[in-house]
Structures are given as structure tokens and as C-alpha cells.
Image 1 (tube, rainbow, N blue to C red):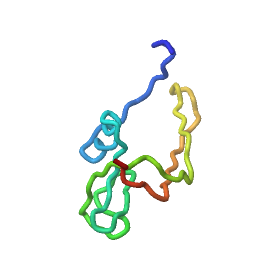
Image 2: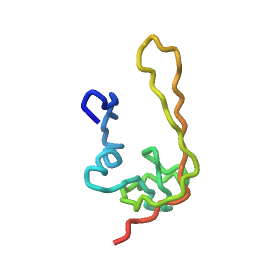
Image 3: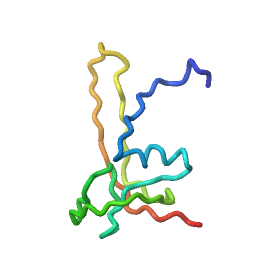
Image 4: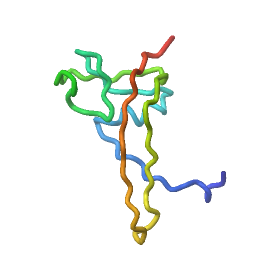
Length: 101
């Protein structure tokens, strides 16, 4: 693929809350927030656990092995003249196991 064929992508704004996820790939890891009290994985990132309302949230690397329950393909209009709208959907996986040594 040549440079002219690489599609334009808007990069996500890195924040204190999401940097672990977006920069984990640089280190070869898939990282998620996890409630340290009940073990629930949070994605997208949040400040409290939706299961037990704990604020004891940590960052953990996972193996990347899980069952995909659903996925979405989001399209972004290529120009302002396009009147198509994009809708985002989100889903969660059933599990994310810790990395194996």
C-alpha cells in the first residue's frame, strides 16, 4: 500500500482516562480498566464501576482471547456534502482472561 492509498483516519484524543487502551498496542498489550473490588472489566473507560459503583479502578493487560458477541462497522462521511449519518454501537465480550506467561 502506498502513502497515497492509506486512508485518512482521525486519531483519538488521548486523555488520562483512555491512554492505557490506545497506547497499550505500542507495548504489545491489550489493556482495559478493571474494578479491583468485583473484577468487572470496564470498556469504554469510566470513573466508577457500573456493577458495584466502586471507584477502585485499575488498569490490567488481558490476553486478547475472548468470545465476540457483536461488532459494529462505523462509517464516517468523506465530505460535508454527504448527508449520510454514522451511528456507533457498542458491545462487550463475555470474558477477558489475564495474559498467560
